[in-house]
Length: 187
Image 1: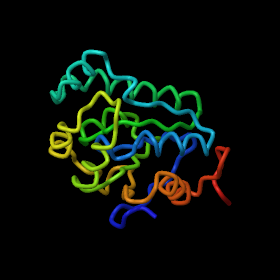
Image 2: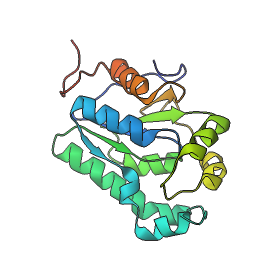
Image 3: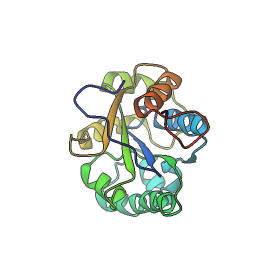
């Protein structure tokens, strides 16, 4: 179940689940599992970053809001394409600030933010084990500093990163009444 405090938003049809959180929270793994189980379109939001952003982050320089806006527009465009074509989807994006989420959810419906939440200690330990990602663990503090957790008036739900990714994916499906391999909800 989602963490108490946020009401489970109703899913529209179509819907895009945006799996969000700081680097190392498990967004990519959980989102890929979720999309695979549901048979929904999937996009790794990091793949939409302009090369200039990747080049800036690789040596440990945090992005500015100005750096992020072109990337957030690409994420929003992916979401819009899914919804415009009547398709469900799952995409990852840190979506750390409410202003970023407002860009992504510019139409005001169809997007649900699935916030993967964990303590700095838990996430730091995970980042220490991760290899081959362009964002170094040294930037985690800047991500937590920027993080504005979704508030009650946003279409979002929170899940703790403690359980295994497969368990989290199943809990997300259970919370929304989603069935494997289809677009429908459980009766």
